[in-house]
Amino acid sequence: GTIPTEFGKLNKMEYLYIDENLLTGTIPTELGRLTALDWLYLGWNNLKGRIPTEIGRMTSLTVFSVDECHTLDSTIPTELALATDMYYLILNGNSFTGTIPSELAAFGTSLDRLYLQGNQLSGTIPSELGMLSELQVLTIEENNLTGTIPTTLGRLSVLQTL
Image 1 (cartoon, one colour):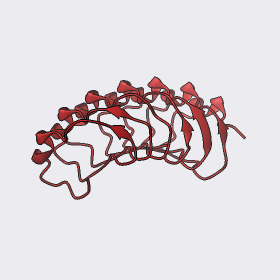
Image 2 (cartoon, helix red, strand yellow):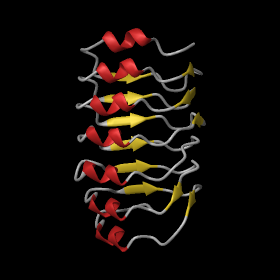
Image 3 (tube, helix red, strand yellow):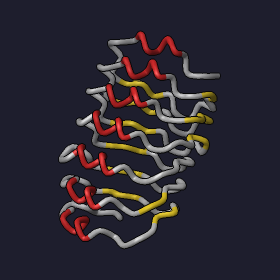
Image 4 (cartoon, helix red, strand yellow):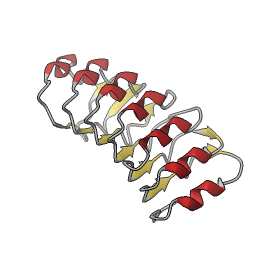
């Protein structure tokens, strides 16, 4: 089945775990109305298309996971950085293209884990990622990245995995 657009009316919902359910279709833009949502797990489904920019309006969102959907295939929306309380951003195992958005640096001290491996991302690693002072995990392998690793990543004093 698909994710019902009616879920966008559940304005008291704080946790939505619908991962690993063989769901198909796209991520409804209506989910962006869930401003009380803290965790959104959509991974390990057969979702396709793009991450709606409306997800960035979810100001309470701390965990967003769409890992291993394989057919999410647009660019990573810069609007995700508007959810400034995010501490886990899990986008691995898809077909995202384009560059790693430098706007992700807006997460500042909130982001703890950033999973980007196994996509089709290209370009260079943004030096701005060095501003994510609490980042412990950054996975970028299995992409099409070029260039050098920015020296600013050396500022990530709590980084455990790269």
